[in-house]
Length: 202
View: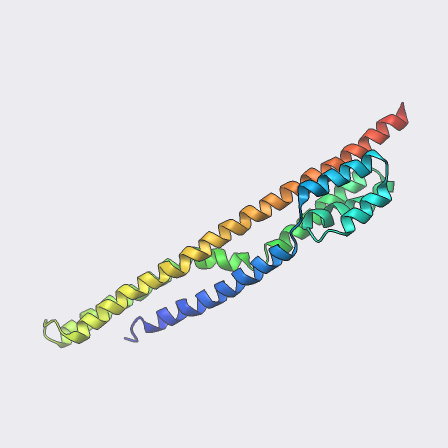
């Protein structure tokens, strides 16, 4: 008969951790942003001139994950397209892991906070029935307090879940966007290498 108070404090704790993760991820993604369209244009121009050194330099100047992924591939251009493709795949997996760091917690909180709040509501209702029984069926202020506490637990659960789900989905879309651009840049590099291979074999 501890009531729903401990459930509400648990939800508050989860919300604080969730907000900290959201701010950390927002800063992380903001610090690693870049104009990828301009990066693609520059990379294509440099590759068209066969300026691999210049392409390396341009990629190294960018803080974006897209540039870092392609840079890992351009480091082994001398080993051929297959080696570059393997490097790109490995770097993409590492980048995905880094960008998804702590997002599992947000997803878990978003999916389960309403159920935790519902647990508090159930506990509060059970305690309300206990108070009602002690009052011999009379509606008292203590009974109304317990019912109110039970309903507040569900409300807090929803308030914790909604931003967690919203930011989790936003970050996942952002990750997909960045990895799509990384794939596009990597394919530009592979197209350049395979084109050179065909020219060399003619």
